[in-house]
Structures are given as C-alpha cells and as structure tokens.
Image (tube, rainbow, N blue to C red; front, side, top):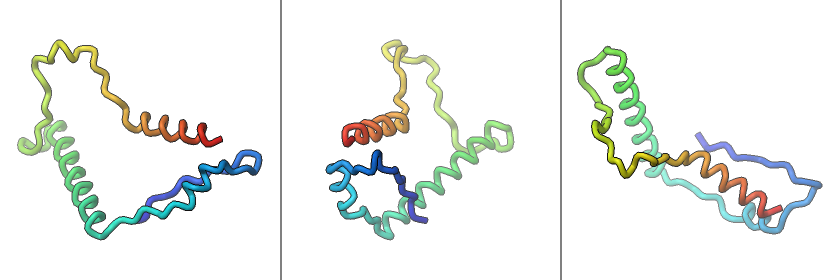
Length: 100
C-alpha cells in the first residue's frame, strides 16, 4: 500500500518559496524489486520478534537469542542511544521553521 503523505495548512495563506520547490520536485518511486525486498525484511523481522516473544514466555526452547553483554565496557557507561524517530522529527520541524 502507498505511504500516506503529510499535509500542512498554510499560515496566513502564504506559501514559502522553498516549499514550492519541494512540492514541484519529482516524486520518489519504488521499483517492484525494492518493494519485494522491503516486504521480505519486514516479514522476516516480524517472525524473529514472534519467536523471541515466544521464547521469553517459555513457549519455545529454540529460536532467536537476544544478546546481552555480561561485562559492559566501562567506556560506554554514559552512552545514551539516539532516538532516531525523535531526531528525524526534530530535523523535519527545523526545516519547516526555516521555510517560514
């Protein structure tokens, strides 16, 4: 199924010039091979997650094993993983603010 597009209403009925350039850009299209690869990876990952959930609840004795480090590296004790979705959201909002 095609991805949904975000729609924003214009502020004061004005459209920034940069936004016009982005709208007129050609839409990115995906090949059948790309969609097939994405579907394969998605379905395989769903299967791994189901097996992992099953092994946690004791349903299965074999299947994927989640790696947990027994002795963490002291250099990484203050490491904070990035929330990639939050980062992309911030980048997106910054671009919108720069356009207005």
